[in-house]
Length: 358
Image (cartoon, rainbow, N blue to C red):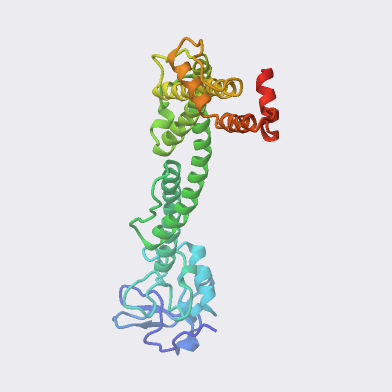
């Protein structure tokens, strides 16, 4: 229950220019009679008592007391004080009934004397309420600014930095909203990176010169994604071209016709050369095999009718590499010495017959 002081010399209420006023309510609790005028330090003639007033005056005084010039003692609880204060829209600078300052040396925007544990944010225009309102407003401003800043940073892929100056409420609102905005921006950036990569790839399929569109060039992450897509398409095109030039080189190598490509990328020239060298190797193996096989049909090497010297060299290399012919000759020689008819050894018979038929 809200309790008020009962010291007559200290009870609250508005006073006149003489420092006194007439008691209207709860007079007995203050040691006065209803309608009794008393002073709070000033000097003036007492006003007529209620018994000397007319019925109309008494009625007017009573009605006036119900609607105007309330004292802190007129309320049964502090909640009633606050309800009345709020309903009137009173504040530290708007307090015609002088409820603020009751028992206080300086007006502080708090009517009467609030209990020590009372939440004064419930009191309209109280310092605590104004501070709470300011904190809510600051937090709202911080959230708005933080979200916008975080979103912009996330969309650019910038560093996550939510530091900011301002009140505690502003900083709290800013930092929490910044994180939300930053993540939203990153999500949008990832989608844009996919789009940039696809557009870069499409450009690479059409041409070999890179040109990043302005909408991507202004954001490093998007420019990189566009370039990655472009380079991927170029690499795939180059790989396919390399295979084409390698196959062409292989064909020319087998035909022994060198036709090195000009005015193309060096990687294509190298692919052609590699294919050509492979073709030359296969061509050589063909002539070496011919010489090797010929060794089965003639014991002593006989010059071939091939026109190019390298073909002759390859043919002769194959002939001389056939060591099986020497083994066959040795067997035939021993058979002759022994007076026996020559028979091709079983291990060489199949190959010998095959080469004679070819």
